[in-house]
Amino acid sequence: MVAYIEELSVKRHKWLDEERFKDGVALCQTIPGATAMQTAAYVGLRSNGIPGALSSFVGFGLPAFILMLFLSSIYAKYHSVPRLISLFNGLQIAVIAIVANATYSFGKTTFKNYRDIVIAVTASVLFRAGISPFLVIMGAALAGIIFFRNKTIVLTENAREKDVYNFKRLSALLSVPILALFVLYLVDIKFFNIAALMMRIDLFAFGGGFASLPLMLHEIVDVRGWMDNTTFMDGIALGQVTPGPIVITSTFIGYMLYGLPGAIAATLAVFTPSFLMVIAVTPVFDRLKTSAYFSGATKGILASFVGLLFFVTVKFALAVPWDIVRIVLVCAAFAALVRKMEILYVVLITAVIAAIAI
Image (cartoon, rainbow, N blue to C red):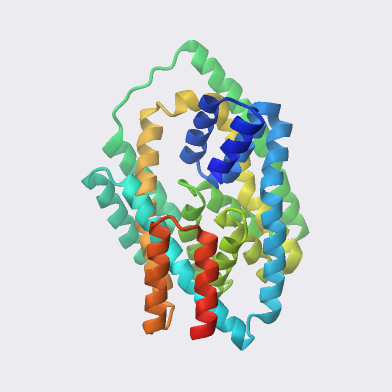
């Protein structure tokens, strides 16, 4: 999706040059949130200010939301039909292959030395022991600062003045979701709870949408018991059928819990921090990316997500009643993803084969 955004914004419409676009991609890969959504917002911000950022952000995410809403309503009515059960058995196998491939891809790009591996293994063990992934991530950030810090930044007086300005700007931006949460709290506590949870998940999802999966799994399935592991996997599978980021699964979760109002609250909440981070961080990113503390913390967090994703892969795999057909399908799906086959095709082909053979 990022490559297609570049084709549209740099080559076709020339809204910004290639160098500035690459800076935006680096920014969106560094801060938490759905990378493709944030890249769309960055293009809008650079070409037309905050109104442009909001327009491109909403325009990019709205089709996925509408399609996910439709699929969620169909799922809620018909998921117990025998033929659809077989279809979703295939989708769950595809999900395992997708998360396993995400673990592999994260590890291949993240592991540079033994320290990365130590952080990843520790994160996986702590998650298995029942420690909150939010605490695991904060611990990984601290470990990253200790292990990977190798630069010292000295702030000039001009830089300090800019920091004060950006703090005021960030404070003003944060007032919007805080006010929205306050209103939800007064209107209905259940909508407040799901919105606050989705915002927290997005704020900790360093490395893109897949990083949100361990957080969602822990909070939705393990802690709150809002749905079982199988239903959650079905939501991820439907999210991969849509043309949007994987965190569109939040729409499914909100719909299954509280219908259309829940879907709207969960979706807006899970994308709001991503949008605000782009607006707030873009002016200071050049300085932020050279910060020893920020760089080290980010490396530690990304390493921890390899471990968390590995645990999620294992947990999803344990929820499947394996037989020879499922084993062959998951291996074939994983191999196809490693060889860069389009995810949508992998999901659909796996689901169709499973519907016929299982």
